[in-house]
Every structure is written in structure tokens, then in C-alpha cells.
Image 1 (tube, one colour):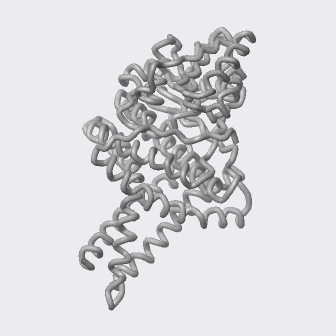
Image 2 (image 1 turned 135 degrees about the vertical axis):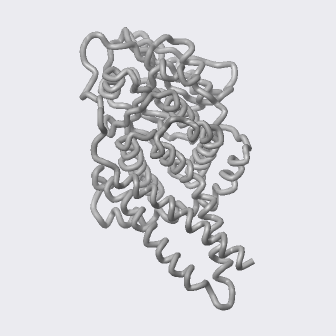
Image 3 (image 1 turned 180 degrees about the horizontal axis):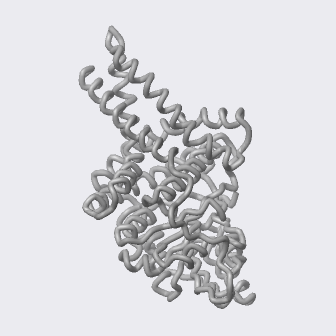
Length: 413
């Protein structure tokens, strides 16, 4: 048993060390993107028609705010359509209908789209809404996300400037990021995701993630890739990789940003992370083969594989922790070579944690060093919690088990 545990411990540490190299790759990303096309804003009279899609399911607390924020976007009224894709079964619909009627009286084209069932969940709703419009561009916002008025003009600029840009993803801020220790830890990790991972992958010219909200799609690219698909829980990543396989590309913008909401409790946080992790694994099962058979560069193939491997790290961490306890339980204790490897791993993990978070923390002006250290100290505990709590679900997704799309409750924070 101890010998097996030691073998598993060695394999787990090797995997996690390799994942550390991926993070070093992100941290050392170049500062500029060759051929970047973004302009300050989309100006002039000849602007395209834009469809703003707001998929909602039982969101009575935030649906009015979402509609009013969309209606406040600075874009010619005759070239802006807002679709509330409402799959709700509660009072959300009544609230939405009343607000939509008021906005229509003010000159904004607002449609409340109802389906007979929730087939395909969010992807199904987006697909249904797109079929009801001929607009060449579609912006997507989840119900809890609020864009500033100038967001659309600034985010549309790269799409207007370059006909091969399939989508634009903008950074996300968090309205409740300072509510408690959990939201502060999440915000720190999300800052690293956007300011280091998303920005770094974009600057290196490899595919990066569409975050499901706060972005705009070019209809031609969506249709070229086969449209929205709902055979995974990460319909956004699935579509991103399919458009890249068709030769399109994306643009990531640190500004403008949109403001959303983080789960403030451990149960909701775990459910959200479990859905994301399972979705990534499902997309990996679906598309890793076509990616490696494609004409992508080796850098792009490896970077995308590493992006999937981040989710595998959770069950690997859980197994490695169990193996560590078993290996250390023998009378002579842990083998000296493993003790050295563990210290090396801990040093590497600390370097990766600081490297990923400190630059983002300072870049976004989150506070002083003491505040950073307190927040960073909570991140390992959060990661261990996810490793233990979500390992089984992630492995099940790897073996093809399908689960329902469960939304994260919103409070309007």
C-alpha cells in the first residue's frame, strides 16, 4: 500500500510541477500583441445593428437592473435590440414584461422571448434568440452583470476594425468583491484569471476563454462554427475553440469592464466551480482530438491542453494529499527524497501563487501589501476545499456523466 501511495505521490507532484510551468508561461507573456486592431471606440454614423442578449432563469432580484443597464448602452436606438431570453417559472417574467413595456415606450427595442421548455439551458436560449434576429453582432450579459454606458462602443471597436475577429471578451469586476473573506479570495483569483491568464493568452496569440458574459460575438463566426451547442456545461469555451478551429480569433480587453456578482457562500461557490470544472472536462473530451489534429501551432495546442489540465488538478490534488498521508504513515516516516520534492513543490506553488496574483492585485489597485498577504493566505484553503469537494464530479464528467445546468443564485449585490 505504501509503495502504491508513493508512486501516486510522485505522479501527482510531477503533474502539479508541470502545471506550474504553464503558469510561468502566462506570467512571462509578452507585453504587446502583434497586429492588434482595437481602437478607443466605435464612432461615426455607419454603425452595425447589435443584438444584446440577456439569458435569465428565475432572477427577480436583478432582472430589472439588467434590462435598464442594457437600455442605457450608448448606441443608436434604431440599431440596438435587447432580447430578454426568459426561461423563468417565477415572478421574474411579470417584472420583465413591465420594465420592457416601459423601455419600449421610451424608444428602445426590447423583446421578451419565452420558450416552451429550457432545452439546452443557456446555450439553447442564446441559440433561440439568435434565430429571431438578423443582427450581425450579439452581445451577451448574464442577469447579474452591469455594463457602463460606453461599453458597447468601446467593445465593438475591434470587431468593426478587423473582419476576422470572432468575439471580444472584456474584463469582469465584482460588485461584492469585498463582502467577506470568500469573495475577497475569489476576486483575487479572478483578477489573476483576467489580468494574467486571459490577457497573457491573448498577448501570446493562443485561444483564450469567452467567459459567458461581458462579450460580443460576430454572427458570421458563430454560424461558421456550427452555432451554439448545448452538449457541454461550458457552451462558451466550446464555441470559442470551434471558431478558432475555423480560423477566427478573439480579442481580450482589460477595459472597458463589466460589473458582476460573486457567490458569497461556500455552497454556492462550490456548485458554481463544479459546473465550470465539469464543463471544461466535457469540452476536453469533445475537442482535444480535433485540436491536436488541426493546423494550430504547437504552442496553441499545448496552451489549450494546459487550460483543460487545470481542472484535472483538483482530483490530482485530492489523490496526492491522500497518498501523502499514507506514505507518511509508515514507521520510518516519509522517504527523504519525497520530503525534498515536497519542499520544492511548496516553494514552486508559493512562487506561482504570488506570481499570478501580486501583479494583478497591484495592476487593479486592490490595496496594500498587508491586505494582499491576508487575502492570499486564504487561497490555498479554498483550493483544497475545491479539490476535495469537486474531485468526484470532475472524474465523473471525464467518464461522460451528464448533469443539469444549475444556475448560481443572485442577490443584486
